[in-house]
Image (cartoon, rainbow, N blue to C red; front, side, top):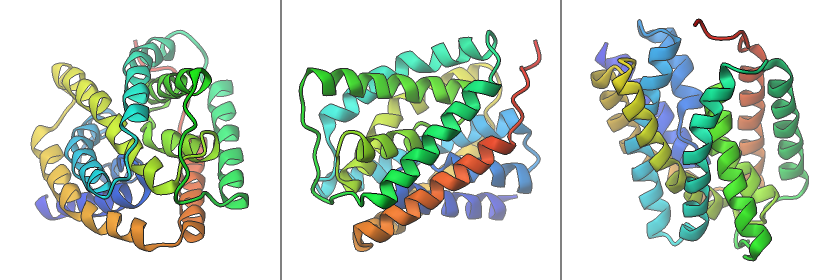
Amino acid sequence: MILPLLSIGVIGGVFAGLFGVGGGLVMVPLLLAFTRLDQRQASATSLLAIVPTAITSAAQYGFRGEIDVGAAALLAIGALAGAPLGTLLLRRISLVWLKWLFIAGLALTALRIVVEVPQRDGAVDYGAVAVVGLVGLGLLMGVVAGLLGVGGGIVAVAALIAIFGMGDLAAKGTSLLAMIPGAIAGTVANRRAGLVVVRDGLIVGLAAAASSFLGVLAAFWLPPAISAWLFAGLLVVAIVQMALRPTARPES
């Protein structure tokens, strides 16, 4: 089973480096298709793999000066608060309307990104509204992760570009840095619950960390317009996955 795990990691790492996401959007379906892990194990194992992937990818963006550390810290604060809230809400409310509302938001974001191509040198205009907005975005990242099992990176990159006016490269680097604390905290909780297959997660994660270099190089090489269209395509993939994913309540 090592070769499939290595292949999954390589694919996930390229996606993480190129798009500034954790790679779970790709790794979870591949783990389900090519390993014996069930849905919960695949999600938890993927989250473990995201930790080294995000650290390595964020470091590469950081070395190139494409991380807003302040924004990443605000996002992380919100995400750490939002994840347990999302888990709580998962058992309390119907997810059907919430899922489709979120899908509509992603679709509008994808449309805006391709219509208004992000500037490579854009930056956040800090003020009270921006600070509150970044914490709120982090909170949304955490809630969405807890409710729908979707990594927060795809939410963060899209919003940082479309709402906060951040350049596409800085948005990706900032997103990767912001997701590290939440991925670690979630992995610790999943490990205590016995859901993480540590060996598989480490194999996937190390392969993804290594291949993320290719994704980051591609991100800096691609023109902003092409990068915007590719990211919009990734949002469409996320929309399809969420639309097809069951929204039934978990077993009690």
